[in-house]
Length: 343
Length: 286
Image 1 (spheres, each protein chain N blue to C red):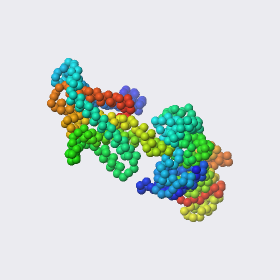
Image 2: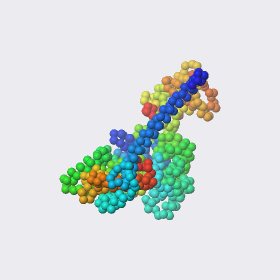
Image 3: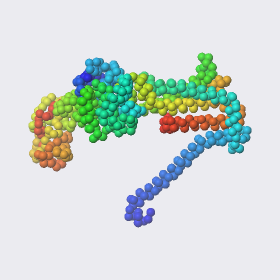
Image 4: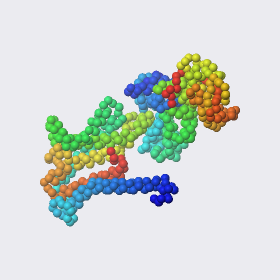
């Protein structure tokens, strides 16, 4: 089911937590709302679910304006951060609850619950209570409980947060498979960029209640539109245009003074130097990250990150004077804004 | 500490010495704490134990230590219609007050915790306020207010006054549980299509059962043996047990009073044990 979010604003008292948020999500697409805590991503998700009513703007699910509809009439599945499993019900009863509400008869309920439990491989835990399950199992129950109702839209609020790193990746891949298999339009909320890159078709990067950029993971990484986005997704050196112009292979770009140039660490190069160079610095720190070396270079009163492959490069010692340059000028993009206040 | 030890390993010896000193201080502290705890327990329980002991005395007056052993005063108690009637009145008042308090406390607590409305803080303070007032004040206030609207002293007046008096206990217990309860449970139920009413009965209320039982039990005990409120609001013709007992002590020093008190202690004790078994002692804390 396609989702249309149009110019949503939300105020909590004097706090303006959402500013003109608009999203257009295609049927069957998985998108992620990504941003630092307090950026408004959860509030936006709760507006779509109906737990919050926007101060202005519209939420349209599959062509129907649901802005004023209570959550129980929207048919939207929601997976909560702490899973919100009913502690007085077994796993099977948790799953059957929504079906009971829909007045499904006993045999239908039984069949659907079994099917959903099989989907998340928890069949043998049907009669256990949620408290006796591990975090990962509880999360699978929460997802199964939402999926058993066959929602057209699934919303997940930091649903992978409580899991350890290894389990998290496994669950993310598992969820992506299930969602693609069943064909549900999915919106996830996270502050974890790796999670966003793993599970999303498109990512909406949010900061200060606004959607900075809504695009595919590759676009977000390769052509960020603001300094905040560049800094939030992956590592980035964000330099004022006049400073970046000193890099020999880059030259003048984005002539306007308020522009910033984003250079990914893997696009910067260093070579030892003795003479005076347009942009020179010293190696402040070096770290081996498997196949590459990561340097921290102090230049022009900034710390720049440089990532070079070890295959064609002899490692430089700390304190070595170096000249900086870029190797692919095309990969450096001009953006507006500053990195001040970014996470 | 020997000379050689301090010179060869001064730091270690010093640490050991200080370690010993702090251990001694800890032990003294723990001992003092234990003594205070024992005294407190004695202070709380000995008066009740003395009353129970006196109720078995063979003498015709209240005196300690009791002499001999007899169930005579218990037998006398059950032979007096006046006391049996008073006990029945008290039970009725207790039951009605408990039902009324819970019927008001559950929705009130839900509104105060989950509601978002203007004046919520004020409403919360107002509902909990009677807890700060002495029962006597509530009793007198009800009596005077009743006089204005020609509402006389009666069981109903006792019930209403006691409800005002007990409501804060019940509200606070339910509120305490509700505050701990993750609102996401209710939202999850809504997102699965359940109405707010269904969500309340199938999800929220189920989580409140312990608090409701505990709150109800406190109200029941308080309403059963409250004197300060009942003294002013009860009709002279149908006195609750507490008022009856109060009169009995004033005009009679028979150990029957001790026997009656012993039975009340026993009843309260039984309620507490049943509650502890049913919902767990930790849930009974306010």
